[in-house]
Image (cartoon, rainbow, N blue to C red; front, side):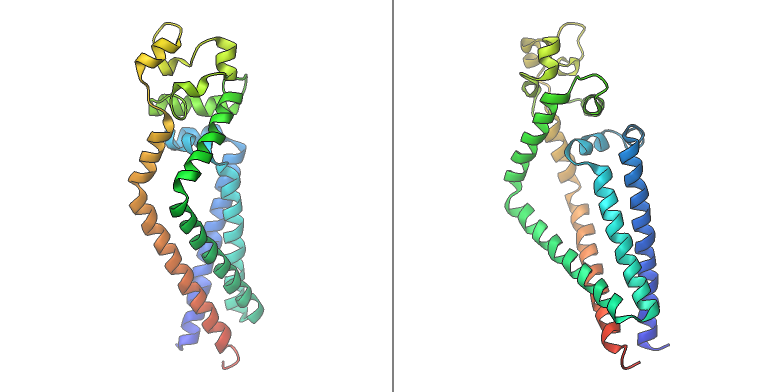
Length: 239
């Protein structure tokens, strides 16, 4: 078997795996978007915390669609030996690679700013929507606070001047260790219940090594995929 044929077969198999993975992410994203409650039940407290920060369903749908398209281009480009499809595959992978590097650099440089903006956005949602009847925000936050044993994003003061506090004239019971008394400012203060955001950050940072390893592996695969695509593209005329 020649080098060209070997790389062509590997390109087809690799991109077929990407197509299947993209399809799986699409299905998961649709599941999360349609039925968040069962997603939280399956994956637990961390999933409910993540849902506070990003709309996981739509993110998974977007990533799944991109991977599906990418895998389709690579697979068909190698199988049909199409220069057009191969160069499209190479270009998309290159764009994704550049975006990943840019995001990584920005994340390292502006970590504190990102955390501040994130806290402001989520806290505002907590103030406006927590406690409203049939509110998805209420369900997610209740699950998060009870499972992580925390109160609010930073602490119980996130509920000051919120819909919940203005309606009930007290803080959520979890902020006072679920004591059978109205959760007033004094009791919440003495309970010293920590916020959910520090716990979530701690959880993320404890897995930073694994996340970094996966990211490095993905970058290596992208570089290899671009190299193989360009090799096939350049040697099609010689075949």
